[in-house]
Length: 437
Image (cartoon, rainbow, N blue to C red; front, side):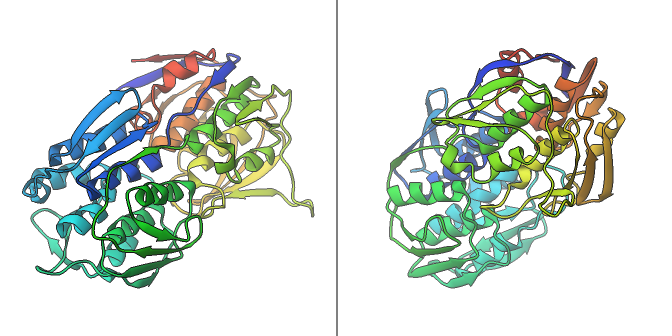
């Protein structure tokens, strides 16, 4: 198990560019399974989760060519249909959360797909009901394979998936993506209401459209998909990762430093900049860049009636839950108090115990809510030894350690590597002191 050794308390300066979006990458790479023709994808983040998904596709027979850093071609013209039913394939899928995204394409193109309980972050219950119900609505049958410990979705012989109206029980991003991909090759028209409409879903829709899919309502929560017989090759460029952009904004504030974040695709950040402004962080949009100036103090807003500020996650265009861990850490050094309400995952706030050990003033109300009383940088966090429980808590703890007094050690950094590419090298270029061991 690798670790980061962080010497905290250093000012940062310079420019940094966010990587390609992890969540979008997992979707669009999986979508290459829908066609026999070559698909080129640029701005691919070369992180652990994406590399493992690519390895999974290669094991299925997909021809993958790395043209240059971040640019790949995929050609799924010779899929090993025996392998995608094997114990080895199911076992590898179970270890990778992003593998859920291959279910829709495999079911649509080959008529069957295994759906093991996915791995990934340990942040509480993560339902897959939306995915499976959507596939059943499209005409798939569902069995449970006791030997493989996985669901088995299959289309009866001689039949194809068929379009249907469906109202999703939750606006699941991965559930919407999976159903959307399966629907592109289904017969007839599929209507998906209460669909997720995050920029990553919009990007997937645009890529599928470039491949020949017929999709209406892109950017809304009502998608209409007219099935086609075949999809074709295309090119696609992945958006910058909004979670990295938010993480870098928080990092600048925690260290009272000024940095420039380059090429952020500002129009696709939604409410993220305004959410950080609620913590007292000044931001300047400079073209497609964000400049975060150095400030002596960051004062948390109150609501108009004077009540304590609440920052909570919500489906897009609300605030993404993936940034709440970072915002919570930032709030520990702001002036004032804020309630952080993590609605989606019941275990994601448990990492605050590590922050309390570092001297932060936090009241964990329940698994979903924490009140943060900011130090206003009058008290520096203390260094400590920590374990990264998931991707987002891991980066939050790394940022906390960078602002702390002394030397901290974060173990299980494989969790951080799953979502952040060469994060130690990129932050060291700004003036951080992080050593990988």
